Image 1 (cartoon, rainbow, N blue to C red):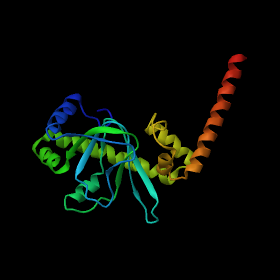
Image 2: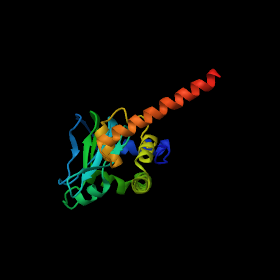
Image 3: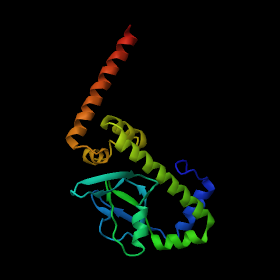
Length: 204
C-alpha cells in the first residue's frame, strides 16, 4: 500500500474484487512463469517467493530488468497488452525461489477494471510506480558505476541479495558474475576496515 500510495480500504476492495477470478499456483525455482516468444495472458501475484523479469539481447545474453517479491504482481504490462492481439511476449518471468501465489486472467481482470472505478485508480497508481522505477533503473544503468549500481540494488531490494543467485544480481547490474564476486570481496574488505576503525575508536 505504501509503495503504490493507496489506502487500506482501496487495497482491500480491489483484493476482494480480484479474488473472484484468482487461481492458486506454485512453481519451483528455475521454472518459468512467462516465456519470451509466447503470448502473455496471465498476471502472477506472489504470496511468497521471488521472480525475475528480463529479456535476451541480440547476442543472446540474458538481461535482468527487475525482481518481484512477496505482495507484488510479477507481470510485464507491455507483453500483456501485446498478448491481447496474440503477439508474443518479449520478456520472460522466471522463479528465483520456489513461489506460491495466484494467477489472474488478464482479459477478465481488464473487464473488472472497466466496471470498477476503484480498480482504475489502483492500477493507475501501479503504472505510475512502475514508470518511476523504470526511470530510476535507466539512470542507474547508464550514469553510475558498478559499485553504485550494487548499492542502489541493495537499497531498492533490501535483504534480497541473500535469497537469490549471484548470477541473477550480476545480470541485473550488467556485469559478469566474476566481477560481482570482486565487488563483494571489496565491500567485505571495506566493511572489515570500517569495523576495525570503529573498534579502535571505542578502545581509545
